[in-house]
Image (cartoon, rainbow, N blue to C red; front, side, top):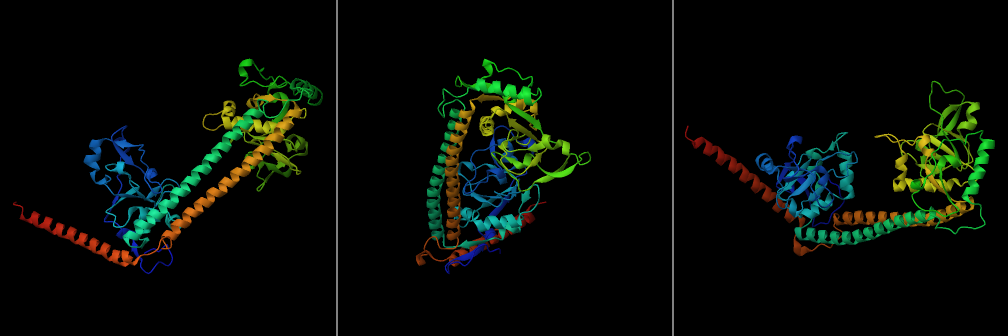
Length: 498
């Protein structure tokens, strides 16, 4: 017997899981050719969820097949389901015991799920126990396999179940359910608040890029003037690199209206961009230097905990270096994911990244917010190439449409977004902490429930030992009945005339 709990009340007992029901029935090995669009619903591994099985069927088999071939795999009233297999190594549903919904009577149970029939204790009590922290941790320790994890019968059926009297089990269930209802209501409120924050953040960004977040200044340099300055910079400093052969922005290209002092532009018109150095251990020459790659770039920040090195020649230092104010954008992985480099240290970058250097004093954080806004809205995906594996190639990145305000307004927009989003992120962090507290409270309630400290014991309800004796007596009588039945069947066979 595998004991997963500590000291119990004197009036409680312990009983193996296999003794809590009269019959365990493995699921049906249904052939792929037997599935149909309608018929009898099939209960799959994924349908076994904490507390209650999913009641939305996704697979069916014809009624004739269910009754003719799998009649012994059909759910009956008051059955429990036990998940014996899980497709994920995380094993979130492995070992869960769940109560069948009323409308699942007659459904076929598929392989990987076992039916527990004739439960001799409170069904919901047993289901709650399979959701306790100790039970879940034990399942993680004993799970078997690599691709499709599973449990051996002895792994799960030898688990010791704390056994209070039936009446006390019922009171425990009602207490747990009462607490869960309150915690679920709190969780729902917190998640709704998080959703409202997300929508408010979207509205902030929408206003920002339409010129509605901060006031325009009539005496400020216009975006048209800014573009003229950038063209001069290109002609004088970049030796003609400004000739990008970018398509002009037409009226049809413009997704929404912007202020008259703004301009719709292609990203390539206002930045200098290039891909990083190709990693090739055989061909690379020079001195080993730290570099950042796709994995180091997160949204709005860098993860520099594991910087690697590559050989970079002295003649390549300027071309592949990263400087403060550079916008680093992922070419693959999660195309478009980006952050602004603001570190004092010098690093280099490899080919999985675009280095984008804004010209004319353009605020890189403004471009970063625009990229994130486009990514979240799904618009950035229009610039990706590839079917299964997506990429944001340089030519397409340069074609990205950008609503360009004057520099002074860019700075005001970035300042406003930074402060507002910081406040929203702080609230989101508090919500996450409260949701964690809710989870901990839920776990604590379950722990107390199965240690006998959640509700008071009552001598008038009897003891767990009394219930254990009744369960074992019932099991013994059932075994005797089956044995007698087999003898009677054998005798009838002998009396048959030849």
